[in-house]
Length: 259
Image (cartoon, rainbow, N blue to C red; front, top):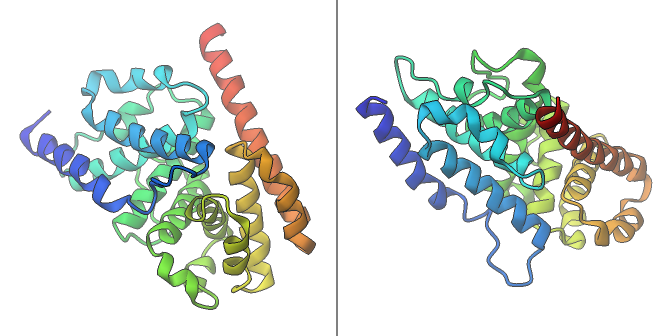
């Protein structure tokens, strides 16, 4: 590792805590499943920056299933930031993904979307080494980040309409983000969702369903169903996607370890 790359890593390690206060919930009554996801993201961010290049490809085999999604998103964000801020090669993200399965590539692309938003790239920006089929996932991560760190905009009517027009995936990520911003508390989520047009509400409800299901917030299911009203099919669609993601993680890890 050259000196410049090492300095970039250290700067990124210091950067994250300053910029993720909105992501961490220190309330002792906060949702435990979401705290697991939050901590996994931060762990992935820091661990990936602290590992040597030769050990990066081995990291994916060391992540427990219940942390895998957000851990990889955190690593994807950190390593994308590193690669964009480090000139003349030494790209770390491709090394991390050397043995990645399709589901792991998907989560990493979401993390790349976090980095893209952090760097204020165009919403359709893609690093050269991220395959085109994962562009929707990059934009999903972009939407998550924008809502999380610009939540003041959620108070406006038709918030983020400029970005949402670019891709439906933006609002899927925004919906997932709302689940974390409000710590799975449904009344404030409903208030925010109501501020946009119905077509966007469909996508946001789908994103909420993905987050609730993937993070296994089963205790919220009845109230979510009741609260979604005419958007119940969108919520259900998102919940199914969340369940499928969990299944893909489990199947992927079985194939890795048992061939």
